[in-house]
Length: 183
Figure: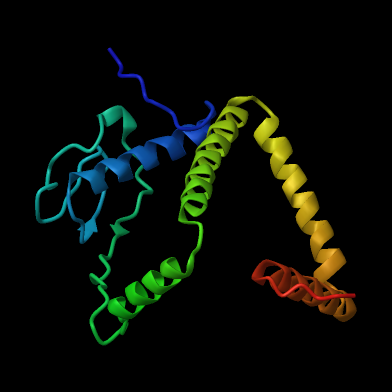
């Protein structure tokens, strides 16, 4: 009995081939670290190491003879060192403590923080529900693209409109910081 192939894309000859190749690559990656893998005609990997002679997929999934070896290179493990980023944590903690000490009504700050987290959770739930409705995500993407185009045309295309945008941003910053200008 032939084993049924799980497809990642709608069933068509090209998408079936792509699905098979993606599944084979995923199985090869999951099986262990790779330096060089060449996939044979019967879905087996031939390289030194853990995958040698081990089937990656049933023979019905085997690629055509035109397959080429795939070369996978592992990146060096890049980790920040003490010389890369000189972050003074104590300075930030002391600065944060000084700002917290300056706050008069600490309970309202905590209430606003908890409220912001609840609103973030609620909005995430709403977006998840909207995302599950057919056509709504595509419609929202279209609205987003339209607004991006309008914003680019309105504020970013011409020098005078860019200056207007910068003035609006500066006035908003001054309002938030509490430096309200009198007009």
